[in-house]
Length: 333
Picture 1 (spheres, rainbow, N blue to C red):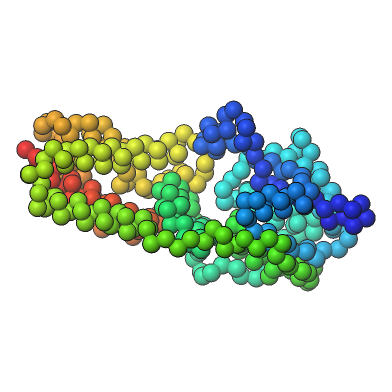
Picture 2: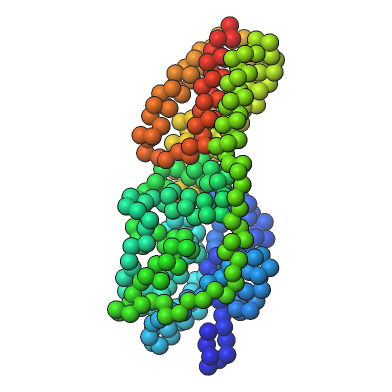
């Protein structure tokens, strides 16, 4: 806010061009450029009010020369030749940019108290705590499947500020030149509970029921429903194979650093994709393939909690289905 010029502007670092003809391709491949845009506060609040998003205002307690420097840096950064940047999910996003601009204006890093929930906290832990507040277990499952072991890196206080909630906490507990960074805080739009849902239909429940149904049917009616199981096995292993191909693509075909070194490939084997189409044949090598998969899944379960990547526990019933169906498929002939 500039009382002298009667202006109240918002610098939004989370803007992107949704109407870019290559938007989806760039977004998936990690090549989409984000940029800082300038909007008036009333217009910005009207948009957030329409979408029922919360806004918390923190008044930054820095000197007048530092405020002038900050404003100058923001306008300089918003110039056409400077405003674009390559978005990085953990290290350079619309939240970390705010931290960096304040530190540039002050000429030093924030003196921040510990904001981490516990020692050894990783990026994945912080994302889960963020999503669990809104009951977004399915989103958490998707993130755990597509983002690899880099997400299990232990975070520092400073790195934790990649999430808005933790940047808010960091500013609240930080000092610059011995003075609190935030002099005043107030809620402008209180929609923070709008996206909090408590659904009992979690991934673990859905996959757990799937496991129980498959296990019971496999044990008691396997030979009677032979054609039924061929169709189910085809669909199931086709989906698992496609997931493996997607993980491979996100690892090697995109520039998303957090999608690299994804150990989910240990259970979502891309080889299941072509083998799924061979389930209606009686070739012996198909039986041998699933015999190998059966023992391989046992070894994977034994190593599950010792791997350098935290897997989503909702995937355990899926591994169970692979284990059971591999056992019966290895005995087809």
